[in-house]
Image (tube, rainbow, N blue to C red; front, side, top):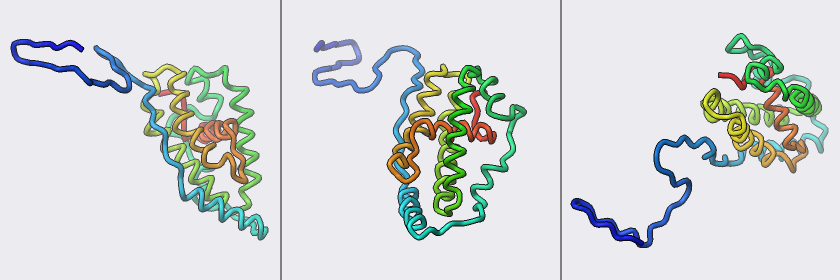
Length: 193
């Protein structure tokens, strides 16, 4: 509690409080990632899905919005999950990435016979793509891999698990990460700039 008096300024620091990161000089903070809110639309669709399951109402057609994620073409010349992992310096993740992607594919196949489930997948995939584009992609090339992983977990994986972990889908962190790997396979996300 110093009182500093200068020629032009008098500063009284009694009762001053600091919150968050208090630093001097140049510092780039990557891990200031705010949690994102759940999607009420998904909650409503989960209820609708339960009704479809109870009534055994199945759909044979895939909705156009979900087909978009199957038919997407890449924006760069790096195609496929393994190639994207290599380009991003993450080739050591390949075995687990392929396994988790397959977990998600099995879940997608199992539930795609219900229209509400398809709509849930579209919402989850669209949100994952959006969060990647605006929160993770800007970090690529400048942030270390662990901080990029933190952003993927906080902005994509954790919200999906929070939204659907206790639902009929039973999406856990492995399956949610599998969704992210599947999006990479489909050329929606990547780990290279």
